[in-house]
Image (cartoon, rainbow, N blue to C red; front, side):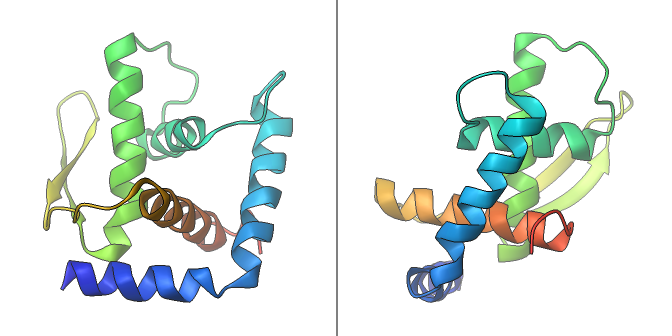
Length: 130
């Protein structure tokens, strides 16, 4: 079922002329707000999503925690596609997700399209972009 969802979603977004526009708008907006120089990349956006979902944006994090924040971002944006499900918060307040279905092997371009599309969907739902 997951392969079918991804195939359908990517086919729809390959034909969606707004995806690139929304992505560019999102990158510009987040770069202005959170980056001093270069445009923010996918990993940076996933980090921001993880930070938002963790709910402690002013806390200082270790390198390992930063990787965990990116993972949270991935889980959150792919949750609506049925790949992850929120499970619980641990004693330190970190959200944990259950892997429901492994992602299929995707080519680099397909993987990029899926994650960018999922990120755009996340920010549309948050009403950060329209």
